[in-house]
Length: 399
Image: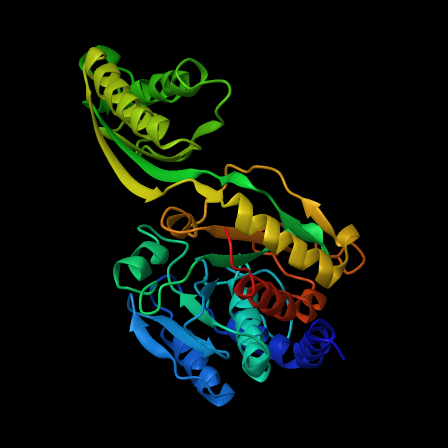
């Protein structure tokens, strides 16, 4: 039996255990940077496999090494994220979230379980490849400043330093059994915009005595769209959206202030900086011109994510060998964001998609929704695929 066939068979054989891990994580979700039980489970499982995990990186991060023959020859990193979202689950199953208002609605439970399966496969075949695979179980992908940035800051990519890093993410738009890749620019930067529009409230029937922050806010929301439509290059995707407005007045009461929250997305760091400055300047000056004022707070998020063309091409070739060329597809650029982007700015990176959709099973909900789920058949593919990618990359000597 070839190494490829052996890995595929072991991945299939382990699928029941990987699914049980995923269901455990799903039933016991933990929010960003609070993944204490998850990290403990991961570390315990890695020790059972025969590895020596390092815990407590960036609070709850876990790193482990799988060393093959000649471990210093080359190092490749594999990453999974562990945190859940503040969403109340609407699914009903034997492994529905047991924590009110907390849910694995982005597939991080599947990512973590899959990488544990990959660890088992790599450790089993450690005498059949050269080099080292660094396994990174990362906290806080869903919350600024992003667990990836903290893992990098605390040395997760050092001692030993990988030549590149590969990340896997579920994709509910892609059928289970399909794998998606995109070279180059893939995902957007993401910054949170908070505006506090301050005026002078009072009785709604006496507008001449007020500085109405609600009216200022209405003008602001429309005017700020010009940042995109008349300042951003039409050749450069960008989005500014506001999803939260709080004006605690009444039918006949104008409040003293209005709070607005939104997100700014870009695919270019220069435009990102320029856009944020323009948003700040316009908000402050428009509010001032209407007699009020606006306090602007920007929570810096993640940079754009760029897949290294060479590493991504090799990963794609490995996937084609693993699942068949007909099951590997191109995916489109997205204005979604991911903190894996931080890795892509410090080393060659590949962030690919694992299909998890099943029309026949009714598994079609998108990520970050209360009904999100995955077709667990994908967990028979994910662990072995990632192991095969890592081994193939370790065997590659050039760029």
